[in-house]
Length: 123
Image (cartoon, rainbow, N blue to C red; front, side):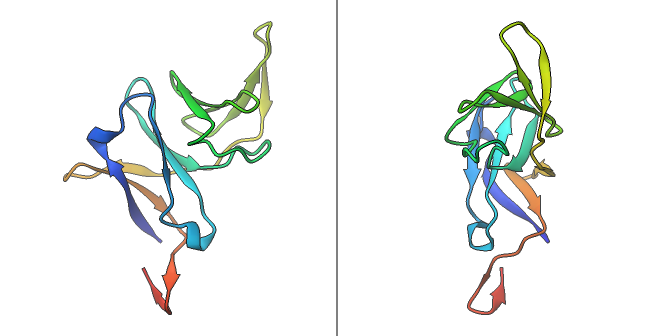
C-alpha cells in the first residue's frame, strides 16, 4: 500500500484528466482529474457501464467527470448518475475513488493498495 506519483500539479489544469499506468502490472488502471473549481480527484479509470477508459473518453464538467461513451457522470465521491433530456437524474453504478494529495514538491499523488512486483521485489 503506497502513494504513487501521477503528474506535476502545475501540469493538470482545471478540467484536465490524466491516466496513471504505474499499477498496470497489478491489473489496476487509474485516472486523476481536476474539477473546474480545482479539486483533485483520483478514481478507477474504467466506466462501470461498458468499460470505457475515462482518460480517453472522459470530460470534466464542473465537479463531475463525464464518460462520453454513454453520458454517465461521476462526482468527486464517485457517485454515478445520468441525466435524461428532460433533466431527470437517474442513479447509476459508482466508480471507486482513491485518496489523492498534492505534495510539498508539487506532485499529485494517488493512494492505492495494489503493489507492483517485478523480478520478485515489491516496488
